[in-house]
Image 1 (spheres, helix red, strand yellow):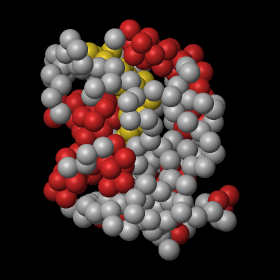
Image 2: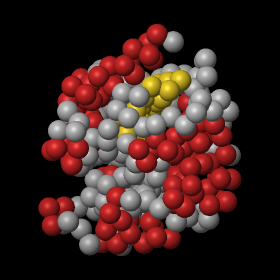
Image 3: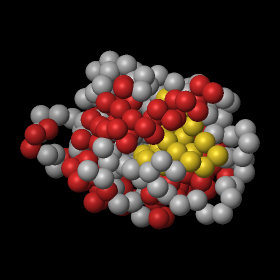
Image 4: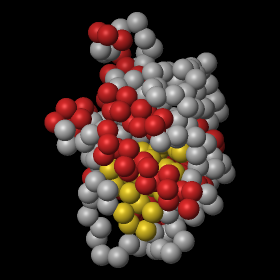
Length: 264
């Protein structure tokens, strides 16, 4: 099967059989720019087929399932952004995990990184529950939207630069439609950090001074009235197990994001 067909009854479904499909990077740019709402944007990104390597991989993983999930139907498509339309905080991830978001259809859901992220969001008052197991689990984000540098699961969790660039218009339009309320952008890891600033500048935010280096706890304001970009180590299994990222470190970044969001 390879992937859930658009227009399905899957709980993560946001598209219909009539949703236009991007087959090339120019298609992505055109369909993202013309999306009139975040729901419209999510539906279009969820059926994108612009990167052949990623399409082949995500659908192969959906067929060749991990043994623990052999009885499940994998999503196998781009994982759309998720969260309320008037969010004051955006969280930018790298890309979905092969057996996490690519399986469940929801950002950071069904893997160890998501376990850490949702627990931290809940402690910060930004998620209704401290976990996210599947798209129909009743989880709800509060004033927060999860987006990504790349919306398809990549081989070895490493998107190619060309794939990042092809996917960037989805991120640009996410930031553009969030602009009236957006106050803080939490960026998870260096790859997403490098993708966020060009996307922000493309939609009209002033370029940051110099070349901001990624670091946990780094803060970069986008002009005097734009959102503040906050760096955070990715809540990957490796970072958690090695102690590079701890729960107090994660809580500090999201606590700061809440502080900024409420102050502006």
